Amino acid sequence: MDGNRRYAKKQKLEEGSGHKAGFLALMSLLKYCYELGVKYTTIYAFSIDNFRRRPEEVQYVMDLMLEKIEGLLKEESIVNQFGVRVSFVGNLKLLNEAVRVAAEKVMIATANNTKTRLLICVAYTSSDEIVNAVQESCREKWHGIKALNGMKNDEIQALDGEMSEEYQEKNPGIKLVDLEKNMYMAIAPDPDILIRSSGETRLSNFLLWQATNTLLCCPRALWPEMGLWNLVWAVLKFQRNYSYMEKKKKQL
Ligand SMILES: CC(C)=CCC/C(C)=C/CC/C(C)=C/COP(=O)(O)OP(=O)(O)O
Image (cartoon, rainbow, N blue to C red; front, side):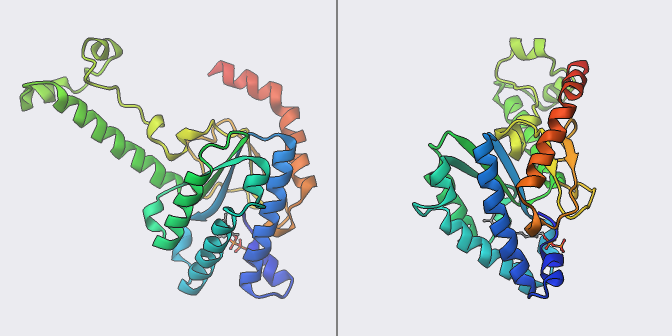
């Protein structure tokens, strides 16, 4: 959701109004997504790098986020209107307690919604996600090894490099290291389309692992200016590319 501050400047508004307008645009685009039948929508709401912005701006966005997350619990919210299951994705311990608690409440309250899923990336970067998945996988591997009764240290070391599927079948106590299942984004399929507003053509540490075969769309509109046409344009572009992308996936 890029371009909130530039929008505020363009409209001669205060910086915070740009973020508020950004949230309104988000709600309206999500409605279109749900009406079009999109099953998974992921938004990049706040990166770990964004915490390096001026403390007043970080505080402003966090306050806005808290207010809006709490709003998602209301009866008339978009979440209840469309049966959305919401997940907050990222290094959530970096959030302040109030935002984290509110996020957890929404995840619990919507856990049984099945129509569509919304993934909100906060305190997220792909590099953090990958590092976390590697650490988690190493931890699992270590626990698996320890689970083998009576194994000595040198035996454990000799085991390294022997984690073949055949070995795993013979030793069900040990799991093959599986990086992808430890990614925060393991709860969703890889995205078909990634839209970055305001004409920027960089991924800025977003879904680097998952976006290998994703169609990238970079409309010029600043995020608060994004509307139905930008979404439809991305879907049409995807449809035109679909057979090529399917062929490419099969070749992998
Ligand atoms: C509950 C929920 C999902 C709330 C969302 C709140 C919200 C709108 C967050 C966006 C914050 C952000 C860093 C936007 C990017 O524009 P920018 O500030 O980088 O704008 P610029 O590119 O013009 O500088």
